[in-house]
Image (cartoon, one colour):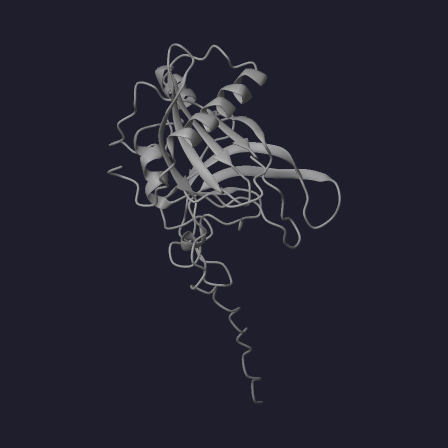
Length: 246
């Protein structure tokens, strides 16, 4: 409540619904006996587009912590994918990195401002949206351009990755919410440049991202559609140098 600026007020009955869905997905993946830890759940439904953070207790119950709007994969041009569903393990086999803060041709910061952490879940199979069939995409969870794209969180926007608010990214990063495998590796004397020295890892670091689709037909009141008043910048015209006079 104190750290994240984009929050969703999820009603109690909806919290229970998603808690049940989360436990079901973990059980289906053979993860029904996890020690206490945090787990990230994403509902990719176009009518929801939300991330819900849960804490799994010793008894295997999911306790709701908070929720924020996200953006997952939309139909688009070449290399656009539908964000895959399932349980994805965040491990040191696919090392995270940090945004360099570089702009693309539209002047957009694809990974957000410099220093933001990019969570890497490795190569996954996903449905292509530009032609039939499946392909392989790099599943990542990261921030996005604070001016043009973060206000659009809550709608499908990405090429398949999961875009999250910058303040939520900072919270997950600082408290090591998904860093259980990194903590294990550091206990074996490994070091990671991506981890800030002032971080305060929780005792219940987890490692699982769960993506589901509630297949809702209508938008729930607790996940309002964001305003789309901020328009994306136009393509900058190429500067063609004048011919050299000889």
